[in-house]
Length: 75
Image 1 (tube, rainbow, N blue to C red):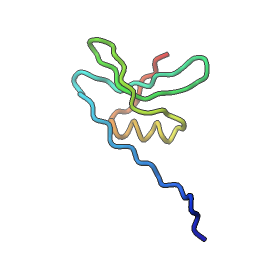
Image 2 (image 1 turned 45 degrees about the vertical axis):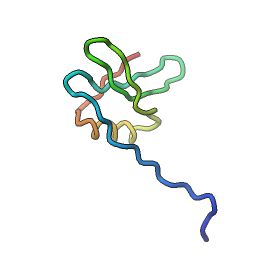
Image 3 (image 1 turned 180 degrees about the horizontal axis):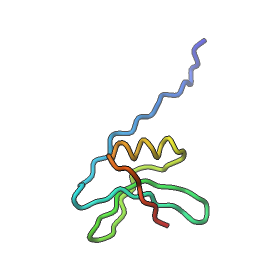
Image 4 (image 1 turned 90 degrees about the vertical axis):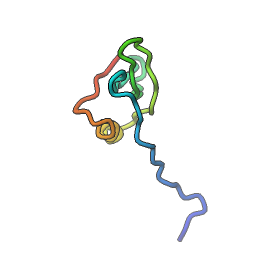
């Protein structure tokens, strides 16, 4: 039986960032534990959000898409 309200898998596009001037970072909240993946400008320190991380699998996907071994955390 087919549901009228079936969910489609959301696929997020591969992150595009300037590898010379930006670095992938995971920004974590001390209060509620929310984690946001994004990119931090090396010179200015400006953080650009990419997506909210809700599971270890989402973090692994972000890490693999960026091509890095580890994503540093910032609090």
